[in-house]
Length: 232
Image 1 (cartoon, rainbow, N blue to C red):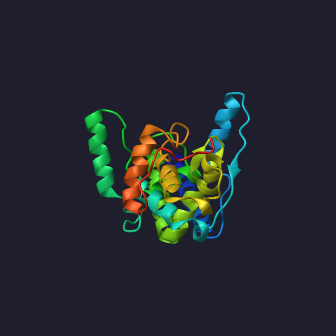
Image 2 (spheres, rainbow, N blue to C red):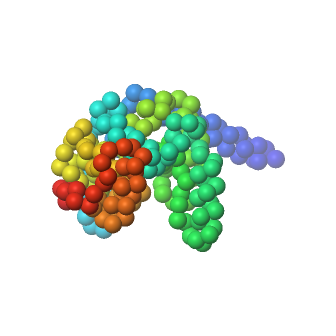
Image 3 (cartoon, rainbow, N blue to C red):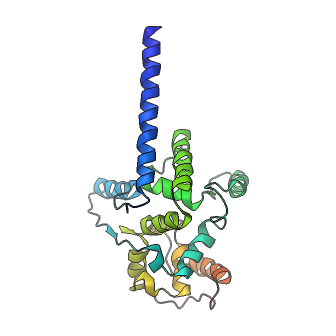
């Protein structure tokens, strides 16, 4: 009985310490710009396992310097309820579950921008109840401790846009050879369209052409056209 109590006490202490560390990490995001995320470390390990060297490119850009059309395009593409929910879009999650059941495979995720940020910063892409539980806690803390603008700023500066390319500034330079400050509405929509799979989609591919055209109807501006000239 004493051993059981000791084990339970150790588990309790471990959980409490983990909770305190998580709170401190998330609170620090209000002023700290992370440059070494879980997703970046995963990509580096993958490259090393393949015997390759991966150069990471990430240049931080304040939210005030990111064009509004880029912000609107990403919100429209990834989480249209971003400014109204508190980290979880239950309706989107229900629709994603129903679609996945219908297709009998994972076709849609339903994760919000805040959930995606939590995964990119701290977690692995593996699917498990433990990981989803940690993601939920971190998401809740982010929504509690950070403003929506700060969450979007972190997201836009940390997500992947190409091999070793992280953040909207380097994404714009990699795909279009311009600073994110100079992105046209068409280019912004194309970058938003490749977020789900940036190593697979091309900014002038058929899927991106269609997706960008739909996004342009939401964010405003001239229709997206396939003659956009990318850098790569």
